[in-house]
Length: 358
View 1: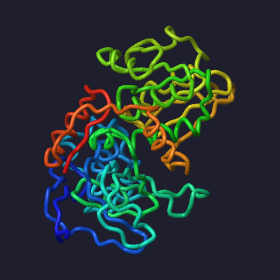
View 2: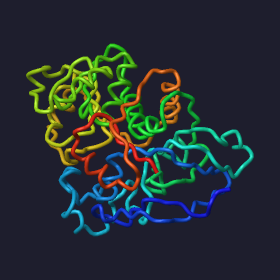
View 3: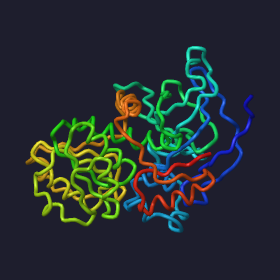
View 4: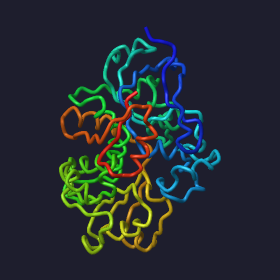
């Protein structure tokens, strides 16, 4: 029989690490169509840091790691600081979840009981024909707790030999990457350039692009090249490399970029005529320069991807079960050490994902 209370890391507002409070909260009550999940592992992502900082606000122009510590503590609550305007603080963050179904509200979902599952964090409450979306851990309570509740439609059993922590690396990074490559319509034989290739999304994108039969050019710190090469990169370049000199203008079909910042103009110059630029983040800064001629004279398509398509997450589960992708787990931490994990995460010295264990 379940107890009435659980431990959770509650984010109480925009600001620094002092806004993360570990406390007892009631175990969520499930309603019709929902299930209760015992959290086994929860990944660490940029979005949890960004949401806590209020980085999504249009008033913020800097990179995420430039807003850490003391400067952040002075921030006011941002009315547009979340994915969908104002973040509903206090909130339990945590976008990634590997867990076990321990309770269902409807008999129709009884087949899920006891199953080890991944949670699709991107909800499409108005259906997949609408781009409206809500995100677990940003718009409603997520996985930085012992338990969470979620619609049964977002629960995906997975059968594999991956550990709980390894599965905890999956939802946000692999789902985001698969969605980006799907939207960009990356084809076998095409050349794709992936920035930030050692991070969670980047390392997932390398594997998923290679799975699609593309030639993968990866940008990462030189000390990480060996690991990134092992997951499928064909060509590796350092973050300070002269990309135009190394690759030449109009040399790639697709750019997958979650970095943005000052390197954005170069990405556009590297694209061939009819090339596609796809992004779901801007960790080096959201404000970029764009020479419109570089875009329209080459028929370049710029794509933002936040709302996941219907096939995205089922595809990821299938790839795992068929052994087509591998986990890239950098380190695990207890949930109580979330501040330490996020500080180390922002140093960007690792390859892959950090995972928290309740």
